[in-house]
Amino acid sequence: MITIGVVDTMFARYDMGGAALDELSQCEGYNRSFRVIRRTVPGFKDLAVAAKIMIEQDHCSIVVACGMPGSADVDKVCAHEASQGIMMAQLMTSTPILEVFVHEDEADDPDILASVFDNRSRKHARNAYWMLFEPEQLVARAGSGERQGYGNAGPLSS
Image (cartoon, rainbow, N blue to C red):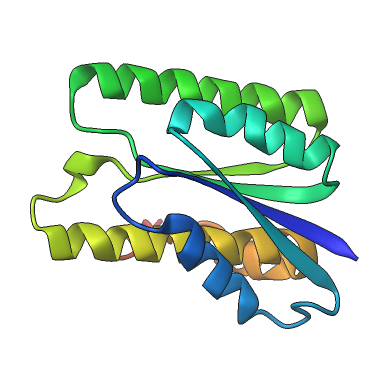
C-alpha cells in the first residue's frame, strides 16, 4: 500500500493538516490503494526533517508539508530558509515534498485568510494524489494558470 505523508505545524493559525487529510480521504482508493499518516511539528522550520523522516522511516511516497510563516520580516527570511530545507530533503530522498505555505499577511480579513489556508491545503493534497495516481490530471492543467489558495490566474493567450 502506498503511503502519503502530511506534516503540519502548531504555529499555523489554521488546521492545514486536517484540511489536507479530509481532502485525501475523499480520493478514490483511500484506505485501499493508499493510506495517509500525519505528523505535527512546532513550526515551519521543523517541516523538512519531519518530512525526511516520514519518507525514510514511514516509507511515504510523497509528503505534503504545511506551514504558516508570520508577517514579520524575520518570518519571511525563516520561511525562505525552511523552503531551502524542504528542497534539500527532496533532493536527499528523491521524493516529492509539496511545500504548502500560507503567509499570515496574505489577507487582512481572517475569513479570507482561513479560506486561503483551506483551499491551498486541499488543492496541494489533491495534487499529491494526482502525482501518484493520476498524473494525467496535472498534464491536462499544464499552462492553465491554476493556483492554490486564490482564484486561478488563467492562461496567457498567444
